[in-house]
Image (cartoon, rainbow, N blue to C red; front, top):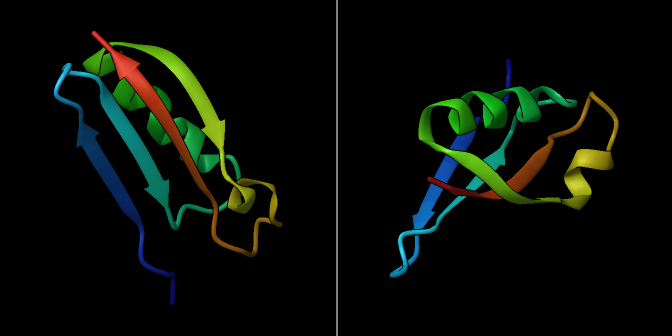
Length: 68
């Protein structure tokens, strides 16, 4: 059974959106992030968490800030 997959969205008072993706294996989280960026706006920066560098068998997470 696959683990829980989450996309967390945080909006700052300045209107900046931060996205945190959890539970998607391998670089698949980047595909989700890129799809969101196409809909929401350009990517301002990206921080890959330690989970991103774990093997595909483990949970992957990344976060990025998007701007419109």
